[in-house]
Length: 192
Image (cartoon, rainbow, N blue to C red; front, side):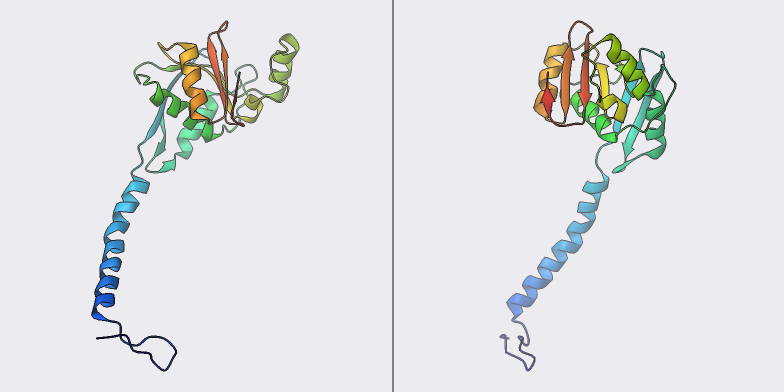
């Protein structure tokens, strides 16, 4: 068979080679589609095991499962990371959880030991009070937006962890060696 022009300006019957090639391509798409779906849905779970040094609470939760953020887990994390001074809870940006999760994986943190949370959400009032005592506290802190965490990763050198976090280029990274914690936020990539 050969391609023949038809009355509609297109080609008539396709050649056997084109027909078989088209069938093979269609079959490949049909076969690959479930595999692609598995890849999208089969992304690994993301879990955080945290200890809040201010409230003495611990949480171990899978916040991302089956390719989706888990609303109940996100609410639990937001409550866990509340402003412990005022008790106010704000919706935390899931990107900051991903940042911490990816950093923990990059430095191979053992899930058995929780990462310590020094600060999560801060109300504007709490942030203002902290800023009056310490001018290094940002006026418009990412903590007040639910987009920052101050953390201590178990059994890891602070400056080594900072170097890895900077390489991830996911947001702000600040090391506070005197206080012993690392600041992470999902703002523009920068470090101090």
